[in-house]
Amino acid sequence: MLNTTLGNEDEIINGLLLSDATISKSSKSNSRLLFVQSIKNKDFVHTVKKYLKHLRIRIRINEYNVKRGNIKAIHLTTERSEYFTKLRKRWYSDRGKKIIPNDLILTPKTIAYWYMGDGLSQWVKKKTKQVRIELCTEGFMKRDVMKIKSLLKKIGFENLWLRKRPSGLRIAITKSNEVDKFFKMVEQYIIPSFGYKIKKPIVRSISEAMKEVSKNYKRDDKGRFIMRRGLETISSSNGVAVEPTQNCVQNTEATFK
Image (cartoon, rainbow, N blue to C red; front, side, top):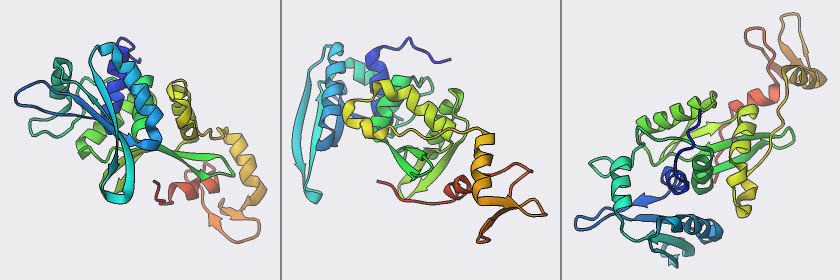
């Protein structure tokens, strides 16, 4: 079961730390939270500020130009606080590397802020309403990515796979029923400017999928699926029908930004 005893701020900060937020270290004083986004995500940063005000700490937001690429960014910084000093001890190793705390709880709000901060969705097959969700976990070591994957599995996401990127590993959700479940879980927390990240797949039963297959494919005398035009052959595994379009999607490597 999902634990809902966390404070509103804790859930949000956990989501931000799963994404791009960092907690600075100081040898002479307490730590503080830092969060940087593209200026196009200005609404998101101001939403975070609104909710973190309940911590009763000063929060500054600055806009500036990034030297490389002529990009404008927005930067949220909190004042130094014992709260963030304690949080840093949970989220960082002794060597200063961000890690996944052993007591982390993934609530719908935490996942939503993680997804807004560092997640994406992509139409893989727009005509058939197939969607892939990717949670950008490249900043974590493999053992921590596996820990996140395990936490997601505990709340019902069984069919996750790791997508290798040049900078590390991402967690991907591709099964239509789990993509749909993910969006239903986070949708109420997604701010309007990030509405484009919500894409609804078509969730079909096995019988509906078989009807779709039968329109373009037929079985030969060996039980294989053959395109009616004779252009391609796709075999089923274990005698279970495989929808050709979905089979192709799972073996397609695409680059997303």
